[in-house]
Length: 285
Ligand code: PAF
Image (tube, rainbow, N blue to C red):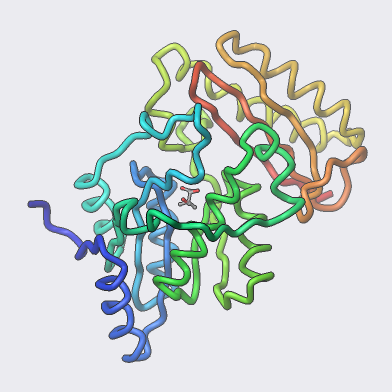
């Protein structure tokens, strides 16, 4: 048995452990994850460690956010490794429920954020954000955190969860943390380990394309269409990648912009085989 933070697989046990801490006046930070932890997750756990008395890491591959033809069965899992890594980064408690524990057989309540979720990834992943918002709401209800930590790589998820937390008066402060990258620029993602050697060698093209956008915007380009063309041209340098989208949107409401102004997000999604990679950069001009 690996040493590490106590791990709960039931809602009641998790609640009771946190109830004791809260009664003693402790603040609670929650880091929701789907496991297969990497440096990106560990940076969230360290941020939570720095700001809260108790740090909970949830490790749960949430089936309701996967579409029928997506990679739920192939999503990487490593319970013992996750426990060790999470504990090393400062987790006090781990919540790792089964799907039977999380979803009653007759579960029928969903959390839907309208508008924001029909754009970008929402177009090709119908129901994805409904699954994310539902499970995150449940995690908030179970753990009742003061703060919850999410990575900026999933920029749309972050905007959607912030909206949900505000709209539902959760009282949870949503803290965003910068994307952590491999040395060659590839944004860390649990899905990276599913890339073949050849796909992995081409995957840094996402970051290169975003840096090309950064350079163009830095040099004064303001026409979104021209920046998008440049990003697409860079992405096509990777023959194994299929571009799903390249968009420039307002960073707050995710609507496409014609002119790069204010806070904008340049966001890309590219498929390498059945592995879908996303990345983004935010610009303030
Ligand atoms: O970003 C993720 O890993 C998941 O979407 C989350 C927030 C843990 C919900 O399952």
